[in-house]
Structure formats: structure tokens, C-alpha cells
Amino acid sequence: MHLQTGNILNFCLVYLLRYVCVTCQRKNNNFLMSQKCRKRMTYLICGLFFLMGGIEYAVILPTLWLYMKNDFSARPYFLGFVLSAFSFSALLFSPVIGRCADVFRRPKLLLILCTLWEIAGNAMYFMGISKWFLLGSRLVSGLGAGGEALILAEIGRVTSEEDRTGIISTLVSMRQLGLIFGPGLNFFLRLSHFYIGPFLVDKFSAPGAFMACMWTLQCLLLIFFFTDLHIIHGNSEHEIRATEEINSQKRIIGSNDDEKCRKLTLKLLYDDYIREEIIVLIALQFNSFFNQVALETMATPLSQKLLNWGEIENSLMYCIAGVEVVLVFMLVRFLSKRLQDRTMLVFGCAILTLANCWLMYVVPHTSPDNPQKNIAFFALGIILDMIALPFLVVCSISLFSKLTRKDSQGLSQGIRRSVVGVSCILAPLWAGSTIDKPYIMFGVMIGLLVMALTMLIISFSKLNTNKDGKGTHQITQETLSSVQHEQDQERQPLLSQN
Image (cartoon, rainbow, N blue to C red):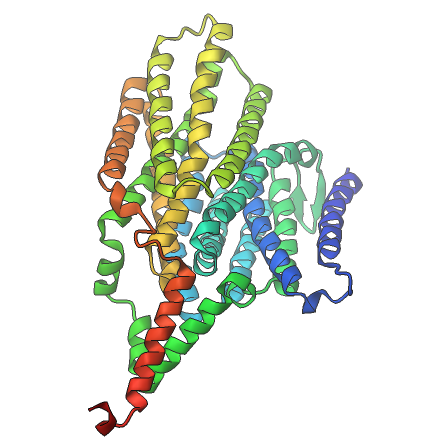
């Protein structure tokens, strides 16, 4: 059994390394000199970061409760603490690492640091010394979750507004692919039974050991193949030169201006984030993830109650839902070239509201005595929810990055990730405590969505990112011309100006 598990892990590692090498192979066998290859590899590694996050969630969650119950005799309430620990540490740390990315502009080093925390957290998970040690492992792993916000911040910094939504859709869909493939890996991991030193690797601790190996591979890829996006991204080279020239002009006038630009003050936070359009997007992010996580929490108990489904049926349901979500992500990428983000947000919010209204009607009125009839009603609500999710997640992230300043994208995405963390903590508590009261449970969720939809409609005009019809390139050209004009005026003798 030891050899079988080892062969599986070795196969995964070798296959991924081989894929990396094949991707990097150029006709002239000199990929380091190829800008296109470096860019492709960097985006591939960014996608793998999201993929690893999805796989980690999918392989650890199914066995977490049995791990704590069988090995450490944990009480049910402790499961809630462990599940919330990951989101709690991500909530606190994401703005910090985002701000560090804004100030130091070293995203590669910060991503490596996030990966090391993931390695440490998963290694602690497979050691499993006590239930409190498991709680600590999820806290440590949550520190690494800030890497996703960091990647999204870099995407917001270097991509054009026309391409950004499609790129974000692809990255987020990679995480969803991890959620699809993760449960399948458990079929192999449950066969594990061997020792690493004094620690037993069995079906409960194997997910931690497996993810520690996967994150180690991710760390190696970051070290050897990753290049900071602001260095290699072709579309941003002109803008980077423009920014550097503008900053150089500021340094001539005085170095204190640059320090003020970096200094984080309450006025800066107020001016950047206490705006109508930003508040609308933050509220929409909270409500969307609150509804989604609450639905994930209640899906398993409701399917058992109304459909008499077991583990196999529920796993199949999650896989089918995951495939649907990936297809909708592809649709969002296609539509991002034709529709504005704000339009797709209104569509997604309306569909999610409809899904919750349907479930609020179905759940109280279905009888457990007729599971065959209940499948169609229950499935329709899930399908509508899965259609809405990609529109809300992708377009809200993309639009949020377009409405915030580029030099503070790290902090902006960190704040957004913190809001998502709060919703991911509160949603399971709400769904778990009101699952026997569907009218209250769905009523509050519908109320939040109606509020978000109303805010979207009222602020629809302020969510337009292209009011003047000027793209980033055109604005940069105007900025450069303005700086050059000011420089010429300063160099001109005073008497000649008369």
C-alpha cells in the first residue's frame, strides 16, 4: 500500500514537471530569452496556485470531521472552529500581504512566502498531534490564502480592462477544477497506510501529506519559472515606463512626494474605498459568497433529508455542479468581450435571487416520502445557483480592480478577500442554525440579495469604467504628454515665457 501511494504521488509530480518542461521548450531551445514563454509559464503557475487551493479544500473537507472524531474525540462544535480558522486567518492577513505587495513590488517573494505557509499548514495537518494542532494547521494554511488576492492584484495592475475579466474568469475556473478533481483523489488517498517517521499517514491524514507535496512542487515552480507580471507583461510595458517617468519627475521635485504616495492614511482609505460604487461591490461580494457558502452547507443535509442521498450521490452532485460552473466560467470569458461587467453582475444577482426564491418554495413543500419527485425541484435550484455564481464572482472581482487605483491593487484585493472571509465564516453558522427553519433561512438570504440588486440598479451609472471612451493606453499617452509639457515649461527661461 505504501508503494502504491508513493507511485501515485511520484506520477503526479513527474507529470507536472514534464508538462512544465514541454511548455517551456522553444524552437531555439532558449526559453529564458523568450518573453512569450516566460509570460505563458507565469500565467500557468498562477493558475496552478488557484488549482491547488481548490484541491486542498476538496480533499481535506470530506474527511476532516471523521479525522477529529475518530482520532481525537472532538465534539461537533469544534468542527465549526476548524472550518472557520482558515477563513479567519485569511481575513486578517490578506490586507497585510496586499499592502506589502503595493509598497515593495515583489509579488514573487510574497507568493513563495504564502506557499511556504501552505506547506507548513498541511504538514501540521498530517502530523495531527491533537485537535488543537489541527486548528493551528488550518490557521497557518489560511495565511497562504492571501496569495490568491495577491495574484488578482497583479492581474488588475498589468492587464487591460478589456482582457481582465476573461483572465480572472480563467484563474477562478482553475480553482473550480480543483474542487472537481479533489474528491476523486480521495479514492486513492484513502488507501494510504504507512509511516513518515513517527507519524502515521492513513486515509485521514493522507490529504495533508499529499497537499504538502503539491505545495512544495508549487514553491519550486515559483522559484525557478515564475517572473513578476509587471516585468514580463507585454501590454503593460508602455504603462510601466510611463509610471516610472512620472515617478522620476516627482523625485526631481522632491522625494517626500513618493513617501506620501506610499503612506497609508485614514484619508487615503476614506477617499479610495468609502465611495458609492465601491460600497456596492463590497456588499455584493459579501452577499454572493454568503449565499453560496450557506447553500454548500445546507446542500448535504437537505439532500439526505429530501432525496435520501448518501456520500456517493452527494459526491456525484458536487462533481456535476462543478462541471456546470466551469462551463459557465467559459461563457463569462466569452461574454466579457461583448458585455460590460455591471450588466453581467445584474444578471447574476437576479438569477441568484430567483434560485433562492425557488428553494424557499420547494424545501418546505416537499415531502421526504417522494424522493424521485423531489430531485427535479431540488436540482433546478442548484442549477440556477451554479449559473449565477461565476457571473457574480468574476465580474465583481474584475470591476472592483477597475474602480480602484492600480498602485493600491494589493490592498484593495486584500480588503475584498477579507470581506469574503467574513461571509465564509458567518454563512455556515447561519445555515447550520436555521436549516430546520427554511423560511427564515432563505428569507434573510433573499433579503440580502434584493438589497444588493437594488444597490446595483441605483448605482448602475457609477459602475461604468469607460465613461469617456478612453482606454488605458490613451490615458497613459495623455499623462506622458502632460508631464513632458510641464518639464519643458520648467526648463524654459523665465524671460522667454513673456
